[in-house]
Amino acid sequence: MSEVIVKTEAELALMREAGRLLAAVFAYLDEQVKIGVSTMQINDLTERFIVEQLAARPASKGQYDYPYVLNCSVNHVVCHGVPSPTQLLKSGDIVNLDITLEKGGFIADSSKMYLLGEIAPLAQRLVDKTYEAMWEGIKVVRPGATLGDVGNAIQRHAEKHGYSIVRDYCGHGIGREMHEAPEVMHFGQKGKGLVMREGMTFTIEPMINQGNAKVKLKKDGWTVVTADKKLSAQWEHTIAVTASGYEVLTLREEERSEPPLSPPAQA
Image: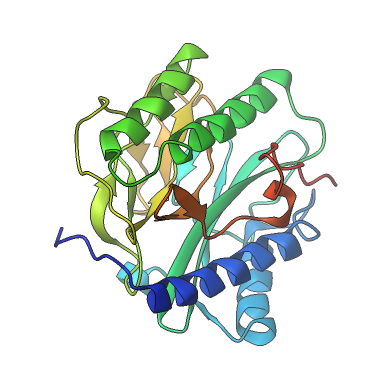
């Protein structure tokens, strides 16, 4: 990757607006993600909302020739799940929706887990602990801290609860481009790696598995699944390093207090 791009205050203001709009997309989807809906219907609804209601661009569409506006990763799909008209959501599913949005030349990236109907307690626990792990990483962001501090905080929380961290995929810098420097690993050692500076922007997006960390890429060239077919969960936010700590640029309304676990979407 190239050199890390430190954003100006004017650029951060544009990223903040993109993040605010992306949070509005998830608020809209809270009412749309239901039992019996296909993942392609969710894709199409998302595209219309971003383009027609927000006058923004779905940044994933066309990126690396990807034809859709989001990834729908269900149950044992780790990431990059491709929407399908024949994949209908059912009770008990845990679903990650990963969406990017560009407005004013800058991109925001976030993902959220949705829980459908009657969720098995072990699935609920995985989703909860993955959310907590993301926030453990976010909370250590500040000037002078390292990306190793972020990865270590996530890794310790996940492993303490008996889970494994996917190591094949990571967070990334973001701004005018969806993927900028640096790479943000979700495991690591304290004090190691890039030292954070005010104005850096990147995603924190841990993928955490019930079983082991091994993953497989399916023949479609996109969909990544757990090798052991056990469940996987992911949450993601776009973060800016501030003078005194961090700002979550994609923060959703339900997270505005001390961040709780986002309420699941129920049928």
